[in-house]
Image (cartoon, rainbow, N blue to C red; front, side, top):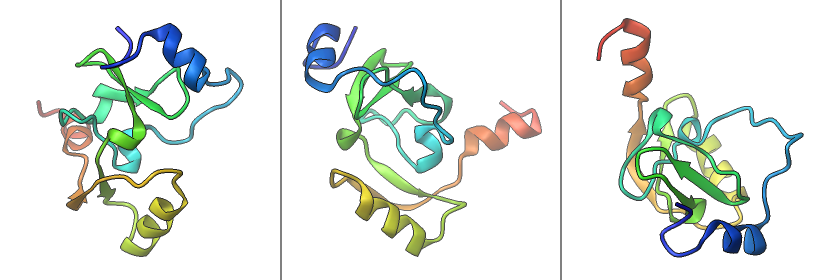
Length: 111
C-alpha cells in the first residue's frame, strides 16, 4: 500500500524516489516525528519517496508535513526551533519532550 491517497506510481511521479547513494544520519523518530496515528520509534522510517515517512504498523507512506513532531530530548529548545524553521513545511508541534521510551526499553531489556 502506498499512501492514504496516492498509489506508489503516483507518489513516484509527484515526489520522485530517494536517491540510493544518500545515507541518513538520523531516523525520523530521532528528529521527533511520529505518524499521524501516533506510531513512533522503530515503527517509522524514511520512505522510499521524497518528503515522506513510512509507517511499518500502518503500512503507509505519509507526507512528513502531515506527521506531528515533538522536541527530541537530546535537542535543546533553541536548536529544535532552528531545525523546524529550516523545514520546507510547517509541522504540527506536540507539546513536551519526546523521551524515546521505546529505546530506553530496548536498552534495559524491558518490554
